[in-house]
Length: 546
Ligand code: FBP
Image (cartoon, rainbow, N blue to C red; front, top):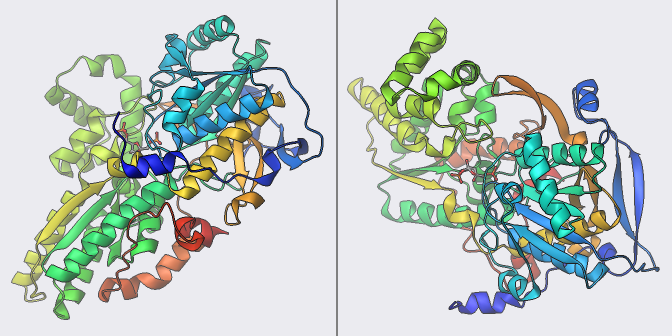
C-alpha cells in the first residue's frame, strides 16, 4: 500500500511512556473501592469484582521473568485516534514479559469473540499500524456482549487459542460489558481475565482516576483546526453565519473543548440547557439575540457550535425520550413489525397526552429519528439528527419576525456543517500516540499481575509522559444503576460537562465577550513534529480540570 511521507516518518515515532512501566516494576495496592452510587445493587451483581483496590505500578530494581501470556483484543464502538497504539502497546508489553506471548485480534468488534473470527497479530502486522489512525487493523463493531450464551462462545475460542486474557477497548457501554464478562469468567473459575481500556472521542468516559478517554485530544484538534478555518473564512467574507454541529453523543465535552480552542461567537452546552430548564425556543432566542447584537455593529457573520446531543438535553424532549424508550421496550416485537408511518401513529397513540403533543410539535425529521433509530445499547442516534440545520432555520424565522416588528435590521445567511467522522480516524496526536501506547503497555502489566475487571489507567497527564502514573482502576468503582431499554442495569456513570468545573467556568466567563466581538483563534493543524510546547500540548479541558 502506498504511504504518504507523513505516514512513513510517523511510523518511526517512539511513543513516550511513564518511567515506571519499563524494566522492573512492582504493583502497589491501594484501599478497597466502592461504586460511585447504588453500592448495594452493584455489589450484589458483581460479588467477585466489587470493592477491588486501585493498583499502581512503581519502579523497582527487580525485573521478574514471567510465563508467556496469550491475549485477545477487541475494538468496540466508534473509532477513536490511537486504537492502533493501544494494540501495539499490548503487543510490545506481552512480548517484553515473555517473547513467546501471543496477541490475537478479534475481528469486527465484540462479535468476533462470539463468532470466533480472529487473526494472530504478528510483529509484521503491528509494525504497519504503529502511530496510525483508524481501527482497520482488526475492525470495530457495536455488538453488545450481555448474554451468557455469548460469554460461553467466547470461552470456547479462548480455550482453543489458550487465551489468558481479553482486552476490550471501548467506551462506557463496552467497558460495562467488559466488567460483566470479567465477573462471569471469574465466577465460573475459567481463569480468563478481562481488562478494559478507556476509548471515545466523546470524552465522557472519565472520572477522578481516568483523566481522559483516548481520541478526544486528536479529534478535538482536528475539529478545531477546521472550525478555525471556517472562522477565518467568515471573518474574510463577512457574509455567513456558520452553524457547526459536533459529535460527542450526549455529552458536550467535544463542543466545549473546541470552543475553548477557537473562541466562536456562540457555543451551546447541552448540560447547561438542561440545568436552566430551557426550551428549544429559549435556545433559538439566545442565538437570535447574539445575531442581532452583532448585526447592530454591522457584523452579519458568525459561528455557532452545537453539540450533537443538544436535543436530548432539552428537558421536555428528554422526558419524551424517556417515555418513548420505556414504551418501545415494552412493545418492541409489535412495533418492529409496523411500517414507518404506522410506527409514528403507534407512538402518538401510546404516549401520554403531554409527550404526544411535544412529539407532534417537533420537525418531522427530528421526531422520526427519535422514534426509529437506536443503537444496540439503546442510545438515540443523535449524530443523525440535523440539529444545526433545525436551529439555523428556527433562528431565521425568529429574525424575520423581528424584522417585521422593526426590531432587527441585519442580514442572515447560513451555512451548515457537521464534524464527527472527519476526526475519528485522524493520525493520533503525540498526546494520543503516547497515552494509547502507555494504556496498552499498562494493560499487559495488569494481565501479568493476574488482575481482572480493571480498566487500564494512566494519570498525571498534564506532566511530561515520564512522570505519568500507571495503574488499574476497578470498573465496578465507576458504576451506578440506570434505566436501559426499560430495565434498571449496572452501567459506568457517564461523565457529562460539569457546570461548576474549570473548563465550563472559564468558558462562561468569556462567552459574552466572544458573542459580540470577533475574538476567533485559529489553532491550525495538528503538529506531529516540532517544539514540545506545540507538538505535545494536550487539551484545554485537561489543563483547566487539573
Ligand atoms: P463511542 O461512544 O462508541 O466511542 O462513539 C462515538 C461516536 O462517534 C459518537 O460521538 C457518535 O454519536 C457515534 O459514535 C456515531 O456512531 P456511528 O459510528 O455508529 O455512526
